[in-house]
Image (cartoon, rainbow, N blue to C red; front, side):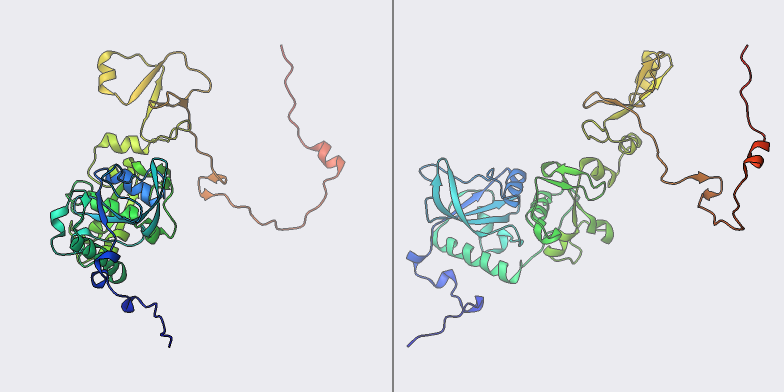
Length: 341
């Protein structure tokens, strides 16, 4: 007699109900370099590091990588064959769903910030907890706190990087667009900004689920992120200046002042300008980049002709159109150059 095999998640037994010899050994890999590791996992980069050494995991073991202060489960990997000094892994869980370490089992907080082998009962609980959160979603949410400076800031940043595919629909690339200026920036240099906190006027989750918190977090370049918070007049002035066409850096340009004398007092009073001297080149560059030392100018090109009354639009031709005869053209007053002396 043959029994039908069900593939429903609810019909599959939990790890805790399996015999001990069927449960793999679980190694907790809590990395302190959360930014590099989260980017490596999200971009499927070989820079993702796994523990090694004689006491580390072997083929058939499971490695759970956790990042952040409170703990975000970034990946669950089954160790495969060794390729030189690196491991080839079969991924069991990838960067698509938010999984919080503290919600996996009672007593998980005791392992925060540590790495090593988990006891058999806790190894079972971790694998069951990951499966349950992946199926049902996380139990609790995370208060983002003050943007970039709160205790949970690394966790929120990791969650946004790991959940990039769920938010945007595509896997994270090595460079992503800033959410405001739309420049492509190295993802290691992007800042996580909780836009939901501005909308709700709170530094807490504000009734949002963890998925909603992640979707409210935007990745911004450093200059744009500074403008989202209290900043100085000079910072905003630098941000509004043109981007260097040579190196692409924004906020590092200084205005070039031509034809002026200057002294030490003037230079110290205006540190964001440079003086070009009295010999003015043609064309004269307006900006100097302190990053790549390039000189360049900027101009405005109108896409259509403008007049005092606004955009000049073509007017329809009215009346009859006639050909001008040669005699009429000859009778018209024409401008003639004056004789030179």
